[in-house]
Image (cartoon, rainbow, N blue to C red; front, side, top):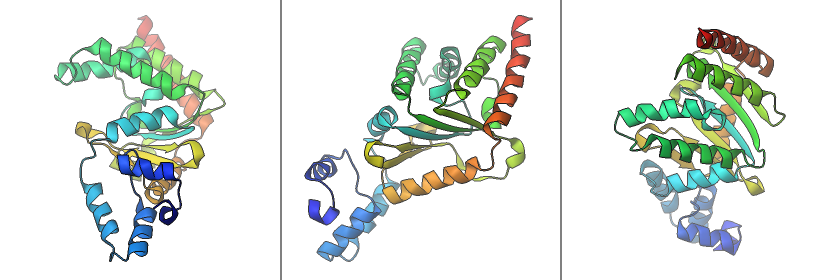
Length: 244
């Protein structure tokens, strides 16, 4: 099996346990080796339509292990860049809707995940829609959040760029996504999270397509300096409101 898939025996074990999923290239190799008439490719298509029970644990693992993150966020500031109070404000909405039982426990988990993502200083390439910058808390909460964004944007391993309203229409309107480069240069991606039904993509061909999509979207955003200047102006505005 390892010879057919051009991988190690350890990788075969991961396929068998469900820790890793067969991708397009692997299914093609199996179909060709066993002359199945394309049955593995058909099964892969059906698998992509279903709900993956292992997706949350795989997403958590990829977020913690990635050496590079490419994040497009169309609605809110993404987890690696959130302040604790901004996260608390967002999670408070989930609590009010009956989706979260204990806010402080949820905030603690989010901050722990943020710390794990940032551990080791992986490269962060972030593109945020201008809509994602709308207020999600008090003026003081937002002033602190803008200050963190500006501070993070000055780090050598972090790039933050804003996709302005004037860039529409663009492919980002389909929803947020996150691309990972993992040890060994393996790719993965995560798309969407509405109703907890986000999809984790392990297929290398498909993950590469998501990465290309991110690059095309980033090309329409303001550059890093323009984005930082915009965040500075917003921070000054909210800072003034917080002092009133």
